[in-house]
Amino acid sequence: MYEVFIKSKRILLKESKQNNVNFSNPLELNKTVLNFIENKAEVLDLECVDLKEAWRKFKKIFLYIKASGGLIFNEKEEFLVIKRKGFWDLPKGKIDPGEKKKKAALREVEEETGVIIDSLGKEYPSTYHIYHCPYNKKLVLKRTFWFQMFADSKQALVPQEEEDITNVFWLPWEEKTEFIEKTYPTLSSLLREEND
View 1 (spheres, rainbow, N blue to C red):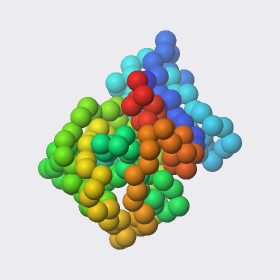
View 2 (cartoon, rainbow, N blue to C red):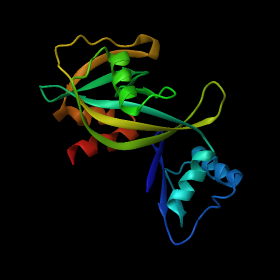
View 3 (cartoon, rainbow, N blue to C red):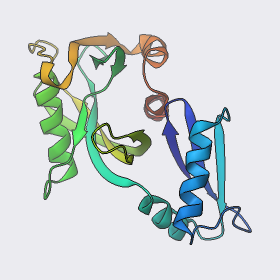
View 4 (tube, rainbow, N blue to C red):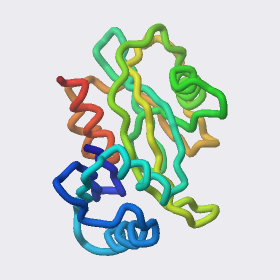
């Protein structure tokens, strides 16, 4: 199953005994997604016989980009949070052409927060979200790769202002509920993964 967020709404792409939309017709698929974005429904179930093939066709109706980031912990059992455009977030950013996802995650964390990572842990499942590109008005499907990271809390925290980051701070892990209330729904699934 694939779970794709559009703000607080979700598209669930899952296997079934039959398709409930024609994945071979990009115009019909695109219209289904656009109608969902514009209506009040919170969840769109897209059922398909062949999940791999349906996902391939689903991705084609968007501008598809890849990003990478980190859930960073320190020795005090705190995690690193950034504040961007009024929301609490985790550091992440687009993967440059030819760049490996781990290297991109390390680079983006350092650029957005000033923090240099001491070590990497596990890779979490990717998250997916859709947004409107402000430059060309296209819908973008962004896949973000996430890595568990560890860093020293004594480092200076430097928000990358040109990326609209206004604050960087360490938050105690036991206060993650407050983070979930002030962030994007897609990140709540990432924090649940850390609890497992």
